[in-house]
Length: 360
Image 1 (cartoon, rainbow, N blue to C red):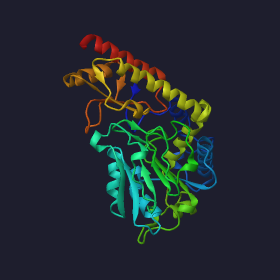
Image 2: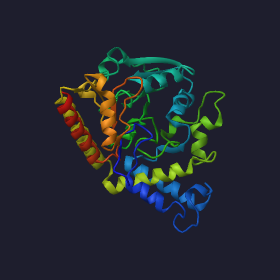
Image 3: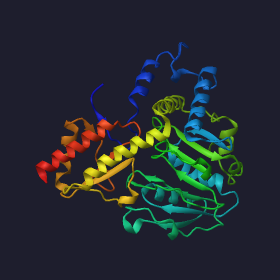
Image 4: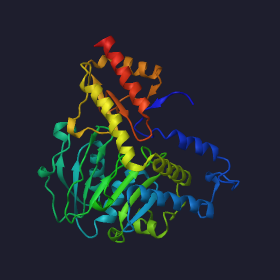
């Protein structure tokens, strides 16, 4: 395998051992004579894969039997609509926290179904910080409170779980799920696109408290009804079987690494290397408030933006790709999800120091 480190925000790097195992099982899964891609989703072979994946995810995250675990399609973006369709339950309003591009998209979609109360926003600070909870204007009459624990584009991450009282808390954990332990019992619903820390694009995981489902908005399509998916074991239609299988391999890999406590330790160490490099630099700068920096997505800029293309070209020559920042903010962004090895981060930090020695 080429010595390349992929810093893409998603679809993102996958654990090398997972890719090797998928390669080895590609043509014949466990002597079945079939590739997982060829299996009936209702056959005993794939049912065993699906059940094991759910069991492993429940173990990793400590998900109790009070919650459904659903493996769906449509990406996290489909959840921007499915959440209000399922969780309004007769109420006309929901609370949303606006901390970046993905929060804004969720808010825009929710407005199609209910009144949105934006309880806090960091837009005036250009989404470089998390609004302290004592500034939030929560409404106990709202159906739920929605927030984005990690903003992939802006690189802002909550290191705390909001307190919302009796109002269910909903989280778009697409870019932070499985990167640290989390108290699932504090959430009404967690959803995440797979293509960052779970597996390939095309799969979406939803963890929803059972008492919150079963009362959808009038006219909600069956495919957007969590209860229908739960009643059918996430097989209301043909699910993304190969993505589900690969997610299961990732869950097994995480368990082999020591679970989420160990993964969090590694993620803290990786992020520290990059942020220390930025903080000690006179050429590079981090736009995010120090106490709200993401462990998963590290945006940074050169004080002289004319050097951006040279930096990116040099990074590619040194085996580091997908470092260009999102088009809406520019600069660079290093996404260092669970599967990014420490060596990749060390190589990037060394190159940044080398680059500064030549241009600082």
